[in-house]
Image 1: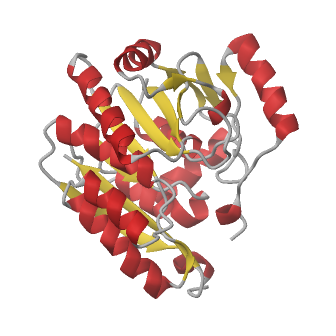
Image 2: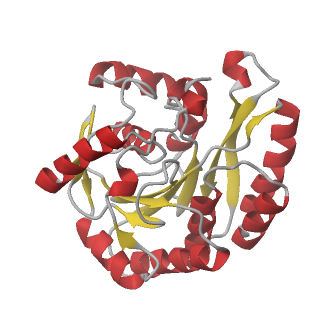
Image 3: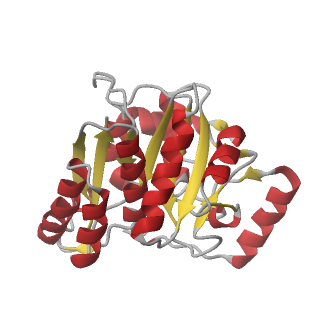
Length: 291
C-alpha cells in the first residue's frame, strides 16, 4: 500500500526540476519506476497485460480513470483506455496532491518526457483555454512532482499514436469555478476542428473498509452516471467521500454536458484489496466513459 500513500513535496527535487523547465520546458517523470515501469520495454509489457484488445471502441467526450500504482489501479485504467476511440489531443484534469503551484494550473508549453518518449503539449489549445477562462493560470510548478496526471499519459501513448496532451492540475475549487472551467473547456473544444477528449484523473474512497468504500463510492458514481456535476460535488462533501479527484471530475462533467453529453457509464470498479487481500483498509478505483 506504499504506492497508495505516495505524497511527495520534495523542495530540492522541485527546485532541480524547475531549473529544467526554465531551460527546456521539458517535464521529467516523477513516478516512473515506482507507480509504473520505468523502461519502455517493461512498460509496454505492463500496459499490454492490462489492455483488452477485444473491447469495443467508444467515441467519447470524456472519461475518468484512476491514478494509483498500476499494480493496484492499472486493471481499471486499462479497461477504460481499451474502450476509447482515438483523439488528437487529450485534456487531462488531475488533482493537486502536493500543494505546489496555482489552484488551477495549466502546463501550457513544451513536453513531458516519459519512458515511451515525449508527449507534446498542445500549446495552441492551452493558449486558447487560458484566454477563455480567468480561473486558469499558466503554471508548471503544480505539475513538478504530481503523479495524478502523469500516470495517465503512458496509457494514452500505448493506445494512441501522435497524440498531444494538455495537463491541468486542480486544487480545491468551489462549485462555481469548477462549472466555469468546464464551460470554458467546452467553448474552446467547440471552436476546434480536431478531436479533443477530456480525462479526469481520480481515485475513489481512501483507507476505509471495502464495504464502506463500495457504499460511498456508489453515491458518487450515481451522480456521475446521471451527468450531474452539482450533485457529485454536493454528495462528496456531504458524505465525506475521500475521492481525491472529484474536482477534476466535476469540471469534466460540466464540459461534457456543454458538449451535449447523453450518457455516462461505469466501465469497471475495483479496490486495492483485490490485489493486497486487505479489505479492512482499501482504496477504490472507478473507470467511467461519458458520451
